[in-house]
Amino acid sequence: MKLKSCYVTQDVDDTQFLVPIGAEAFNGIVRSNKTAAYIVELLKKETTEEEIVDALYEKYDAPRERISEDVREILTTMRSINALEESNQVLKGVGENDKAKL
Image 1 (cartoon, rainbow, N blue to C red):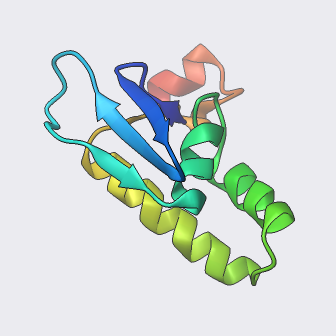
Image 2 (cartoon, helix red, strand yellow):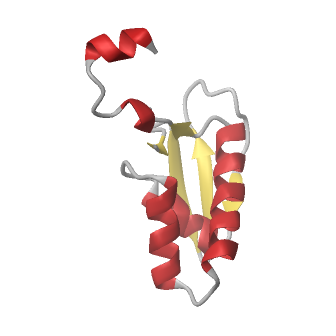
């Protein structure tokens, strides 16, 4: 998954703003705290939920379970505003003939 290219970020002081540009259905601005902003930065390239959790676990002194819950919550919010391009991780490495069966 990754952040859709129709979303841009702007940092002002210690706050990051996520803004849709173009014809996205979401019409507003998302203000992120430092943790959410770090997740958005990670989402600027293709990544997985597990990789995001790993990166936050290395960066912050917090229980992995709590980090995982926070990541899941932030990703759910980002999905609700259609800010993520989701790659089908399940189908990676599956042949075209196998995909047709799914």
